[in-house]
Length: 238
Image 1 (cartoon, one colour):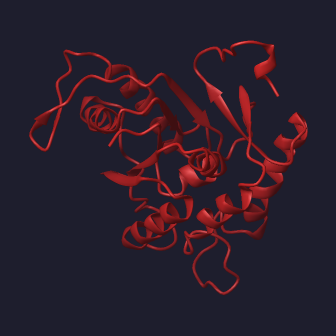
Image 2: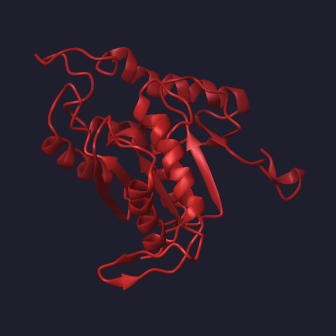
C-alpha cells in the first residue's frame, strides 16, 4: 500500500498530540496516511503496553488512518544505530510516503529527540540502493520521501511553518482522549504525571488557538524542517 504521508512517533499518542489535527485534515482531503509507533510505551507510569496497544488502534480509527504499525523498540532505551535504522527503512520502503512526519527535534522526553534523528537519518538512508532490505522475503526498492517535517511537542519550539487546522481540533482531541489511561481522569487512583492534569488537556486547544491567532485563523499546528520551506509563488502563502 502506497501512502501519501507516514507519521512516526516514539510512543503511541505522540503523533496524535503533535499533529493529529493535520493528519485529520489531510485525510479529509483524500490523502492516505499511516502511523508507525517506535515503541509500545511500556515505561509509561499509567496503564500497560497491552492497554496502549488497544488505545492506539482506537485512536487510529478516530483519525481514519489507513494503517498503524508498532516496531516494538525498547521504550527509553532504543538507539540510533544500524539495527533500528533498517527497521524504519523497511517501513519507508513498504509504504513509499511522499512526506514523513516525526518527533520534535528537541523535547523534554529523551525518546522524542532520539526518535526524531533516527527517523530523519533512516529517510535519507532509505534512498540508497546499496542498502538492501526485504519484507516477507521480498526485496524492497529504494525510496526517499520528498519531505521530512518535525511536529512540535512539549517544548514550545518556534515553528518554521504552521498549518491551518480549523475544523479539525475536535477530532484531534478525541484521538488523544482515546488513550484513556494516559490523560486527565478525576476518578483515577494512579500516580499523577505531567500529562495527566486538566491543564494539559486544555493546552491542546489553547496552543492550537494561539498559533492560529498568529496566522489569522482559528486553530493551527506548527512544524519545523531541516531544509528551507519553498513556495511556488507569493500567492501560495495564506
